[in-house]
Amino acid sequence: MPIATPEIYNEMLDRAKAGKFAYPAINVTSSQTLHAALRGFAEAESDGIIQISTGGAEFLGGQYSKDMVTGAVALAEFAHIVAAKYDVTIALHTDHCPKDKLDGYVRPLLDVSAERVAKGENPLFQSHMWDGSAETLADNLAIGQELLAKAAAAKIILEVEITPTGGEEDGVTHEINDELYTTVDDAIRTAEALGLGEKGRYLLAASFGNVHGVYKPGNVVLRPELLKDLQQGVAERFGKADPFDFVFHGGSGSTAEEIATALENGVVKMNLDTDTQYAFTRPVADHMFKNYDGVLKVDGEVGSKKTYDPRTWGKLAEASMAKRVTEACAALRSTGTKLK
Image (cartoon, rainbow, N blue to C red; front, side, top):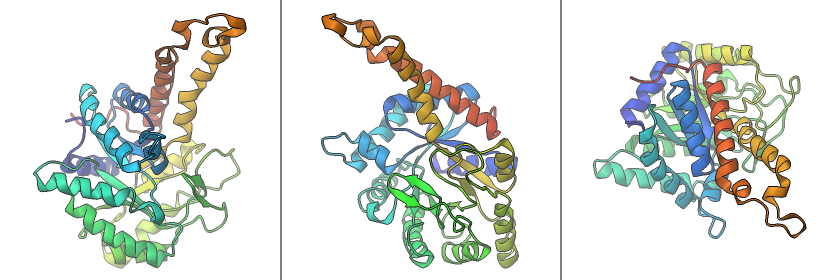
């Protein structure tokens, strides 16, 4: 059962929270990056999450039509087939989706899974993300309530981002400033609107100074200890210990200590995109520089077919990205924790 059923996905998240580890959530944009992620999880003996952003889905839909739903469905269906060859369990997820893209992405994908569930099948994706961080918290949570009800009906987990993450992710941009920290009041309002599981399970992307993209150490002040305050504040109000399953966004460049603190405070999923993109592209650049006279027909020559064959440099890219995924598993303590 390489692609998790709804029941198995819930078990994965429960095990991560109880065991103080998190699953790397790897963004993919092609069949090759999908295989790289699967390979990395398999080599680490870790279950994991593979996700597709709106931009990734548009790219997968082809540059002729750029249809996000087509791209996401196509790769998800492909994943259901090829993941069977990897001895790990994988959940499929869609990443950041802002309000203006809901009708062209998450809502149609929820409908696809609802149709499957109505026929007695499992949903195509196991979770979807609603990114309302650019909206007021009231509007964000109102849309979250609607989406959570639809997700729960389709046996899908919803991820919500209630306050801004800095930087830029597929066109959603937030400044790096003091607003990048979720307050206890924000968390309480979230629990009041979305419940604490009784209305459907959701993952919470809270902000503790996170920034998407590339940044040097010292440019961003992460405060993962804030997550403990959010857990305690809501627990005191509602009487449920450790109520939230947190997601760590913008983790590139984080220290081992920051990651460890986040894990201790309820993070069960950490997104990786920037680092895996670089890991995939770096050996390709190296190959092209070292073999320029083979990949190019220089001075009227014919080049070297074996050198410019995409399989030649593509294998290097897959291996490099897979290695970065195994490193992420080690950092997040998921290595060796796969379901038996």
